[in-house]
Image (tube, rainbow, N blue to C red; front, side, top):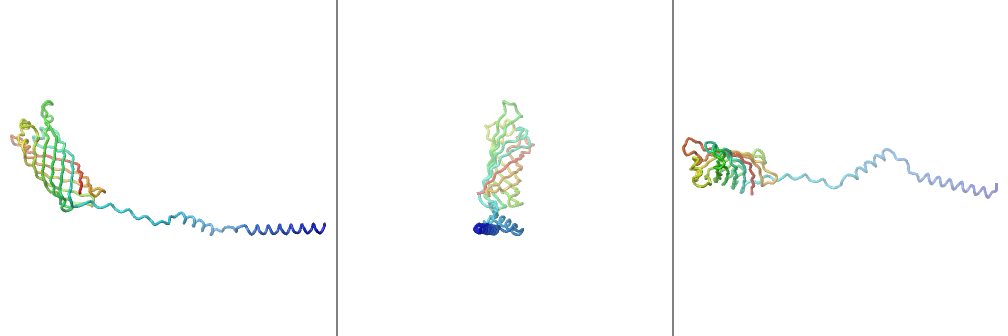
Length: 236
């Protein structure tokens, strides 16, 4: 073999060896278990937010106490005695109270109410007469709070009432005094549930009522009534 060819082959062999050595140097070393675990931990850390934790939600404000109170009630008014036998069914009752809460346990008020009934089955269908009853009064309520949002109350009231009918209509049934203004007195007990809106409370109540001018003209009668209502209260 010629010396020149031998020199070329030697140079090529030398260059190939250098290329292999360079390629070996470029290959990364194998990853250890510790390095893999560190990479996973770093990835988990990136997914976590760096923002501060949101503050806890503030509790709702407590119910409003002390101030003017408006209460609207819807329910039924029933009667015991001869007048109850004449009507034969409870009356629809609408009642409005406006008062002032002096303390969280004492509330004074004035009220007005309107009840709708009729002579019912005591007469024939052609002789049935509507009997609207108008009333008013005032009183005081004492409230006992079980929790900041649940309470029980007891109230008493006095006032007057009259049947808004044509003269002589109720006299024909033996209740002439109902056509004139008469005295009434009563009491109620109820529960109140104060809402997230600090001005509003829902309630349910019931009570008894003495209505003097609904007594039977011939005597021997006890003119009592009862009421049951659902209540909506707003404190200003």
